[in-house]
Length: 237
Image 1 (spheres, rainbow, N blue to C red):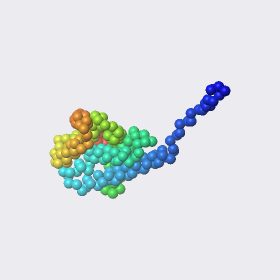
Image 2 (cartoon, helix red, strand yellow):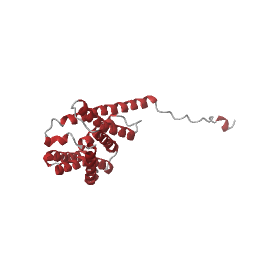
Image 3 (cartoon, rainbow, N blue to C red):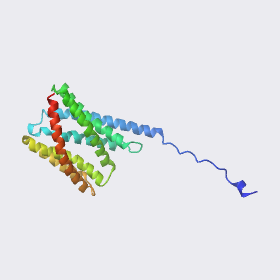
Image 4 (tube, rainbow, N blue to C red):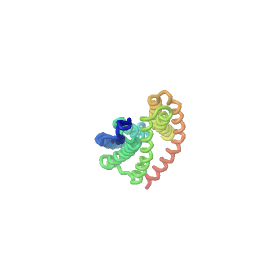
């Protein structure tokens, strides 16, 4: 009998097994729950910022009513969402954008909701639209920055940290120069920016972080000027 007669029959390779649906469903459920939790927290924080304006002395009022709070709080919430949800089976960019946008809009809803229902403070509808629109931009940027800080290393992560630190740095400079009676809060913002850079940057990230912060402050000065002008126009409508 020839050797060919003893050859094993050809078998097609088994198709690759698909990942279990249960794992994907559990990850999706965890992502949705985390985003909802961060949104609820943002609504409460937004209400707290409005309520705090009636409690804090004038010199420290910007601590509650500032761009810094409305950028760094969503950044912290988005970071918490990314840390709580398993990365495997999750689209990180989608999750980061959802958390960043939901957090910023939650702050807007909480702030103006508390003002209307509890404080009985009237605001022009155009102001609500302005800050909601600004939240779409800042929420997307915050989401991307938080994702980069969570997943990248080196100069790219340093640049994301520097971008976030530039917000309180620019906000503090603006407060000191334009609102000298609130200079104490402005210097507090500047100190917070330095803390973010010193604590948030790792080895190999510091140069990119500090350089990005410096460049972003220069660009942020123009952004604050445009936002202030838009806020004055919206307040008059």
